[in-house]
Image 1 (cartoon, rainbow, N blue to C red):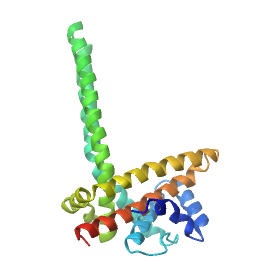
Image 2: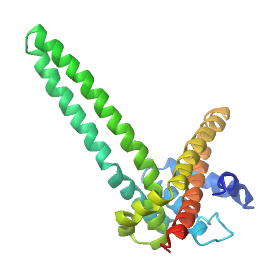
Image 3: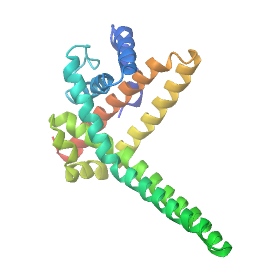
Image 4: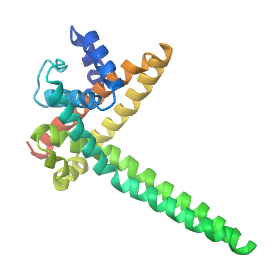
Length: 225
């Protein structure tokens, strides 16, 4: 993977300022901001196709919106186990908290200790799954972009094969995501916070490009495409 290219490709387009500014504005509008995510997905698609014009035009807003909605659905499905763990932890804490408030001091102390242990255990599980999801999700998004089918994001056999046999590639995508977020936050904050609107959209483009690079490399390695 070309890490530097993921961060610099945006600025190679002669109209990058206009495209990034428009993308930043669109991310401000509730519901319409799905189109910004769809735009990032088009970047992924272009990278997969080796299109030299990696930054799309802002046309077909409706099509971008639908793709962005599907992207969000995919991310939500992969996040469901994380949500389930959070709910189970909350229910457990509430039950133990109720027992602690209606029992003797000894039982109350034991329940308090159980709450602490439960919180630590579930927090660790959520952290582990969160990292796993962050590594696997780009492979699912890449498969969706490559196949243009929502169901392709849930072909778990293909997805896990991509990740397991190219773990270094997808760890690199995670590193790029973290770095892009940091750069966007720092640069955006320097611009009195207003710049965050546009740097956040830029980081979305970086992630889209890295996702395309990773899928192209990983799928070639296992003969998926």
